[in-house]
Amino acid sequence: MSNVPSDLKYTTSHEWVRPLPDGRVEIGITDHAQSALGDLVFIDVPAAKRTLASGEACAVVESVKAASDVYSPVSGEVSESNPRLADTPELLNQDPYGAGWLTRLTLSSPGQLAGLLDAAGYAKFLDEEST
Image (cartoon, rainbow, N blue to C red; front, side):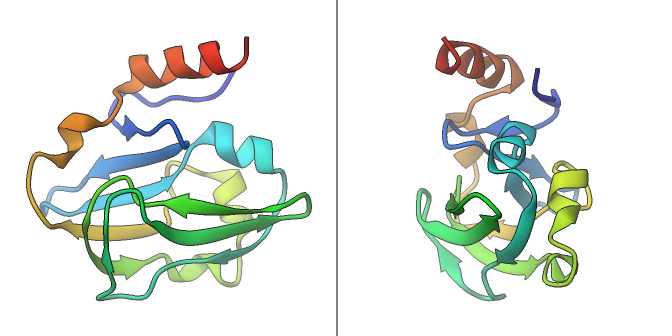
């Protein structure tokens, strides 16, 4: 069973979003996604000041099995990306909801999180996807 923290928002493409106290959001991939990918060996994150549209491919995670695009769950400007992932991509496997975050965005408009799944909705999606 995948870990699905209740304080995050989710997408059906297995990204999560965490609102930060300063109004920005933090984005990563879910425990389910990192588990399905296996041991990560390379992560390419977006550069600061890049503008992302909701649904746009914004990062690449590569494992010994495959490479996968990560899609931005919301639109906004990249304020920073996780510099530790370049040298230690395994952080995403070890701590997908903490040290393994991918990028932080300044939202282009408030209210975008309302369209994302809550933890219960994402857990239900995972259950339906596995049947």
